Length: 185
Ligand SMILES: Cc1cc2nc3c(=O)[nH]c(=O)nc-3n(C[C@H](O)[C@H](O)[C@H](O)COP(=O)(O)O)c2cc1C
Image 1 (cartoon, helix red, strand yellow):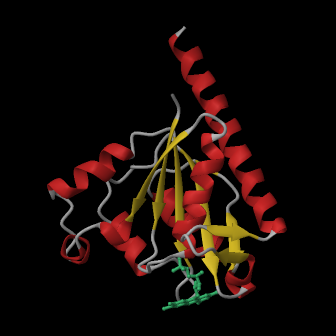
Image 2 (cartoon, helix red, strand yellow; image 1 turned 135 degrees about the vertical axis):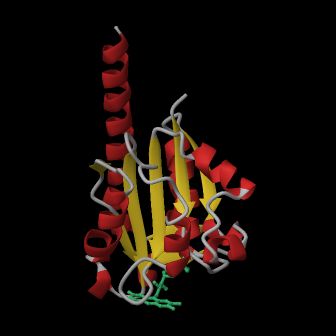
Protein backbone atom coordinates (compact mmCIF):
# COMPACT_ATOMS: atom_id res chain seq x y z
CA UNK A 1 0.00 0.00 0.00
CA UNK A 2 1.19 3.50 -0.79
CA UNK A 3 2.08 5.49 2.28
CA UNK A 4 2.41 9.14 3.09
CA UNK A 5 4.32 10.86 5.89
CA UNK A 6 2.94 14.20 7.06
CA UNK A 7 5.14 16.43 9.23
CA UNK A 8 3.63 19.33 11.18
CA UNK A 9 6.10 22.03 12.22
CA UNK A 10 3.88 24.06 14.54
CA UNK A 11 4.98 24.55 18.15
CA UNK A 12 1.34 25.32 19.08
CA UNK A 13 -1.41 23.08 20.42
CA UNK A 14 -4.11 23.18 19.25
CA UNK A 15 -2.72 23.99 15.82
CA UNK A 16 -4.39 24.97 12.57
CA UNK A 17 -1.47 23.46 10.68
CA UNK A 18 -1.85 20.14 12.48
CA UNK A 19 -5.61 20.30 11.88
CA UNK A 20 -5.07 20.67 8.13
CA UNK A 21 -2.63 17.75 8.15
CA UNK A 22 -5.19 15.58 9.95
CA UNK A 23 -7.88 16.63 7.48
CA UNK A 24 -5.55 15.88 4.55
CA UNK A 25 -4.94 12.42 5.96
CA UNK A 26 -8.69 11.69 6.04
CA UNK A 27 -8.98 12.82 2.41
CA UNK A 28 -6.02 10.62 1.42
CA UNK A 29 -7.59 7.67 3.26
CA UNK A 30 -10.54 7.96 0.87
CA UNK A 31 -8.02 7.27 -1.92
CA UNK A 32 -6.67 4.22 -0.07
CA UNK A 33 -3.52 6.05 1.10
CA UNK A 34 -2.36 5.62 4.68
CA UNK A 35 -0.80 8.71 6.31
CA UNK A 36 1.52 8.71 9.32
CA UNK A 37 1.44 12.09 11.05
CA UNK A 38 4.50 13.34 12.91
CA UNK A 39 4.40 16.54 14.94
CA UNK A 40 7.82 18.06 15.55
CA UNK A 41 6.59 19.53 18.88
CA UNK A 42 6.46 15.94 20.24
CA UNK A 43 10.18 15.46 19.63
CA UNK A 44 12.52 16.08 22.63
CA UNK A 45 13.36 19.81 22.55
CA UNK A 46 16.98 19.30 23.64
CA UNK A 47 17.68 16.88 20.79
CA UNK A 48 16.33 19.46 18.34
CA UNK A 49 18.14 22.46 19.81
CA UNK A 50 21.48 20.71 20.27
CA UNK A 51 21.32 19.03 16.85
CA UNK A 52 21.57 15.46 18.19
CA UNK A 53 21.10 13.70 14.87
CA UNK A 54 22.31 10.33 16.23
CA UNK A 55 19.61 9.94 18.92
CA UNK A 56 17.52 6.73 18.89
CA UNK A 57 14.45 9.02 19.04
CA UNK A 58 15.18 9.98 15.45
CA UNK A 59 14.89 6.42 14.19
CA UNK A 60 11.11 6.62 14.10
CA UNK A 61 10.84 9.76 11.93
CA UNK A 62 13.73 8.53 9.78
CA UNK A 63 11.91 5.22 9.22
CA UNK A 64 8.75 7.14 8.46
CA UNK A 65 10.65 8.93 5.72
CA UNK A 66 10.79 5.63 3.81
CA UNK A 67 7.44 6.60 2.26
CA UNK A 68 6.36 7.46 -1.25
CA UNK A 69 5.18 10.96 -0.41
CA UNK A 70 5.83 13.54 2.29
CA UNK A 71 3.63 16.46 3.32
CA UNK A 72 5.59 19.22 5.07
CA UNK A 73 3.26 21.62 6.86
CA UNK A 74 4.22 24.74 8.77
CA UNK A 75 2.75 27.94 10.11
CA UNK A 76 4.44 31.08 8.81
CA UNK A 77 6.54 32.71 11.52
CA UNK A 78 8.29 35.98 10.72
CA UNK A 79 7.77 35.55 6.98
CA UNK A 80 9.22 32.01 6.81
CA UNK A 81 8.66 28.45 8.11
CA UNK A 82 9.03 27.92 11.86
CA UNK A 83 12.34 27.57 13.60
CA UNK A 84 10.96 24.38 15.12
CA UNK A 85 10.54 22.81 11.69
CA UNK A 86 14.07 23.86 10.72
CA UNK A 87 15.59 22.24 13.81
CA UNK A 88 13.97 18.98 12.73
CA UNK A 89 14.91 19.24 9.05
CA UNK A 90 18.51 19.95 10.09
CA UNK A 91 18.64 16.53 11.80
CA UNK A 92 17.66 14.58 8.69
CA UNK A 93 20.12 12.85 6.36
CA UNK A 94 21.36 15.09 3.54
CA UNK A 95 19.10 13.65 0.82
CA UNK A 96 16.20 12.49 3.00
CA UNK A 97 13.58 13.58 0.44
CA UNK A 98 15.23 12.08 -2.64
CA UNK A 99 12.71 10.18 -4.77
CA UNK A 100 9.67 11.39 -2.81
CA UNK A 101 6.71 13.38 -3.96
CA UNK A 102 6.64 16.38 -1.61
CA UNK A 103 3.66 18.63 -0.89
CA UNK A 104 4.36 21.81 1.15
CA UNK A 105 1.49 23.33 3.14
CA UNK A 106 1.63 26.62 5.07
CA UNK A 107 -0.80 28.53 7.26
CA UNK A 108 -0.45 32.24 7.92
CA UNK A 109 -2.25 35.13 9.55
CA UNK A 110 -2.03 37.14 6.35
CA UNK A 111 -1.77 36.58 2.60
CA UNK A 112 1.31 38.83 2.58
CA UNK A 113 3.58 35.82 3.08
CA UNK A 114 1.97 33.56 0.50
CA UNK A 115 5.29 33.30 -1.35
CA UNK A 116 7.15 32.05 1.73
CA UNK A 117 6.57 28.50 0.47
CA UNK A 118 8.54 29.37 -2.67
CA UNK A 119 11.27 31.63 -1.32
CA UNK A 120 11.84 30.02 2.10
CA UNK A 121 10.58 26.43 2.33
CA UNK A 122 11.15 25.01 -1.14
CA UNK A 123 14.90 25.75 -1.29
CA UNK A 124 15.36 23.77 1.94
CA UNK A 125 13.28 20.87 0.62
CA UNK A 126 15.33 20.92 -2.61
CA UNK A 127 18.52 20.77 -0.56
CA UNK A 128 17.09 17.64 1.10
CA UNK A 129 16.84 16.04 -2.33
CA UNK A 130 13.20 16.76 -3.19
CA UNK A 131 12.91 16.83 -6.97
CA UNK A 132 9.17 16.29 -7.30
CA UNK A 133 7.87 19.29 -5.38
CA UNK A 134 4.17 20.02 -5.80
CA UNK A 135 2.85 23.58 -5.95
CA UNK A 136 1.90 23.94 -2.32
CA UNK A 137 -1.15 25.09 -0.37
CA UNK A 138 -1.29 28.32 1.65
CA UNK A 139 -4.25 28.93 3.97
CA UNK A 140 -4.88 32.07 6.00
CA UNK A 141 -6.37 31.86 9.47
CA UNK A 142 -9.76 33.28 8.50
CA UNK A 143 -10.17 30.37 6.04
CA UNK A 144 -9.66 27.82 8.84
CA UNK A 145 -12.48 27.32 11.34
CA UNK A 146 -11.55 25.39 14.44
CA UNK A 147 -14.23 22.98 15.72
CA UNK A 148 -14.83 22.11 19.38
CA UNK A 149 -13.47 18.60 18.89
CA UNK A 150 -10.13 20.03 17.72
CA UNK A 151 -10.72 19.33 14.04
CA UNK A 152 -10.82 22.12 11.46
CA UNK A 153 -13.15 23.14 8.68
CA UNK A 154 -11.81 24.93 5.63
CA UNK A 155 -13.50 27.63 3.58
CA UNK A 156 -14.71 26.29 0.25
CA UNK A 157 -11.99 27.90 -1.88
CA UNK A 158 -9.05 26.60 0.16
CA UNK A 159 -10.80 23.26 0.62
CA UNK A 160 -10.87 22.86 -3.17
CA UNK A 161 -7.25 23.97 -3.41
CA UNK A 162 -6.17 21.36 -0.87
CA UNK A 163 -8.19 18.62 -2.56
CA UNK A 164 -6.68 19.58 -5.92
CA UNK A 165 -3.14 19.38 -4.48
CA UNK A 166 -3.83 16.03 -2.81
CA UNK A 167 -5.18 14.79 -6.12
CA UNK A 168 -1.89 15.86 -7.74
CA UNK A 169 -0.01 14.03 -4.99
CA UNK A 170 -2.00 10.82 -5.55
CA UNK A 171 -1.44 11.00 -9.31
CA UNK A 172 2.27 11.73 -8.92
CA UNK A 173 2.77 8.81 -6.53
CA UNK A 174 0.89 6.46 -8.84
CA UNK A 175 2.91 7.61 -11.85
CA UNK A 176 6.10 7.32 -9.83
CA UNK A 177 5.35 3.75 -8.70
CA UNK A 178 4.54 2.90 -12.33
CA UNK A 179 8.01 4.10 -13.31
CA UNK A 180 9.52 2.04 -10.50
CA UNK A 181 7.70 -1.09 -11.72
CA UNK A 182 8.86 -0.50 -15.29
CA UNK A 183 12.44 -0.24 -14.08
CA UNK A 184 12.24 -3.79 -12.69
CA UNK A 185 10.44 -5.42 -15.65
C1 LIG B 1 5.60 34.00 16.52
C2 LIG B 1 4.61 34.11 15.39
C3 LIG B 1 4.99 34.72 14.21
C4 LIG B 1 4.09 34.82 13.15
N1 LIG B 1 4.51 35.43 12.00
C5 LIG B 1 3.66 35.49 10.94
C6 LIG B 1 4.08 36.08 9.73
O1 LIG B 1 5.20 36.56 9.58
N2 LIG B 1 3.21 36.09 8.69
C7 LIG B 1 1.94 35.57 8.78
O2 LIG B 1 1.21 35.59 7.80
N3 LIG B 1 1.50 35.01 9.95
C8 LIG B 1 2.34 34.95 11.02
N4 LIG B 1 1.91 34.37 12.20
C9 LIG B 1 0.54 33.80 12.26
C10 LIG B 1 0.56 32.28 12.09
O3 LIG B 1 1.32 31.90 10.95
C11 LIG B 1 -0.86 31.75 11.88
O4 LIG B 1 -1.69 32.14 12.95
C12 LIG B 1 -0.85 30.23 11.75
O5 LIG B 1 -2.09 29.80 11.24
C13 LIG B 1 -0.61 29.51 13.07
O6 LIG B 1 -0.63 28.14 12.83
P1 LIG B 1 -0.77 27.08 14.03
O7 LIG B 1 -2.13 27.26 14.64
O8 LIG B 1 -0.63 25.75 13.36
O9 LIG B 1 0.35 27.33 14.97
C14 LIG B 1 2.78 34.29 13.28
C15 LIG B 1 2.40 33.69 14.48
C16 LIG B 1 3.30 33.59 15.53
C17 LIG B 1 2.87 32.93 16.82
